Length: 380
Image 1 (tube, rainbow, N blue to C red):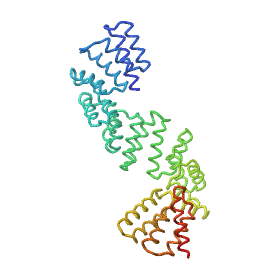
Image 2: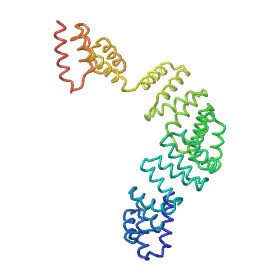
Image 3: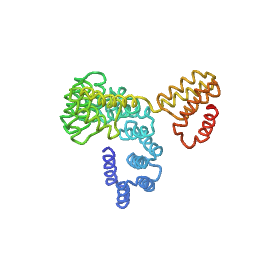
């Protein structure tokens, strides 16, 4: 929206310029309208050779370069405007935006604060500051700017949602509800605000409220995992176990399962006395709660301990690795330790057999051949 407004201003200034010919105006207008910003900048620089002192022309060139992605070049034009007028708000906004795009949030904040020095009630600045700080530092650090922006425009949905989250996290539930309700009065179909109300009801354990709000959100087309998850948990919490199962198993079928959703399915089956299903889902919950990399981590610990000559401790780590995942190579490693280092042939034989039966991948052919050889030798 801001880009459209800026473009409109630029087009108007071009039409009003006495220095341009009609043909020049039409050419630049066409370039801007077709988003050929690089060409627009070059055309403007040809029409207006240096030295340029007119701030409107500097702004047009700066805008074209900025939209073309030539941020460093655009900066030079805006800085020339600010040398003439350090409080020129449009250029300060542009410099702040360029700094953000370049990841220099400290400099962007400085430019926004320069705007506030001359216009302390500029809602757009507070909104930009809160968005930037929320994304770069975290929501809590943006709270002061969110509060100010909300006080200036309580109907802005994005600000109301973010500010209500801050209040919710601070357990100020009544204030969070008031912020959301004020914004919803201006836009009752805003799904972001309704999501905020659902999250607030969930935090307050208002399960019937969660069911009502999430049902509306889903009806209107938002089936995001968090909304569906909250609805399923709410049904469980009010004792509607089959509804909870239907919803949460739907998440599982659509590859949206989490440790939490699997747990509530298990508990719902338990409440319905379907104990076999409950155990199945508790086992799934355990599996989901364990990182897929855990077996690998323990295997690495075993390798480090083995290299440190701590053989018994390395075996403990390798055994833990097998508990999480029965990897063929771990079985082979344990077999060789018992065979070559501990000289325990019976145990080594057992692990060589387990390794062969685990169907190792083709790239471990040499290990399989050696294991078959050792099985024959140790079986004598």
